[in-house]
Image (tube, rainbow, N blue to C red; front, side, top):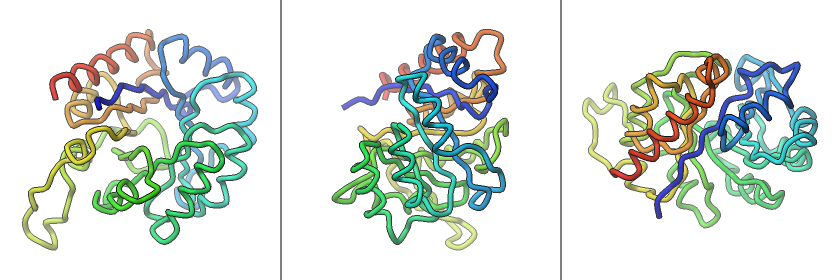
Length: 242
């Protein structure tokens, strides 16, 4: 089953004083999702928004709120985020290796869609059990910059995590040939976040990513609708040719 393009402007790059109108503007420009970055100041150094802001925004939009939890204790956030109206709940594998089954179950019990994210430097193999488990996640988010701040430059080497599982050559002195995430999971939503825009979308799309998070490249554009359209076309063209 072919995956579809989902373009998710990162609201971290929006005008927070006018969050509802910024959300509406992005949707009118063709956005499929709204990407919400929740940071606790511990797992990452920055501190952003939480459930109260999600709840406030939900009163003004029916959009899919794609929530990325950059937090140390994601279990503590499931109930408040569910009550607030989050649509997707993506947690980090780095803090969930021992309790991800319970975490996924709780996320689904609150009618949210579970996803798992990984930082640069985390081997892609660590998410495989979460995708293949009896109660699996439904999306993998590959960070192409270090999480915690918006407006960073794209890290091309992270595209290897979309195109092939990575094993450090510093320890093994060679790369093992393995199947790609997309080949391994052809119907899985694969999201990329960090430095995505007109100059980098083709690399991400050709690697197999279909969910694209973009912040400053969209909000800083003179014509955000054109940027969103370009990114969607790149994803769809690459999915057709794959």
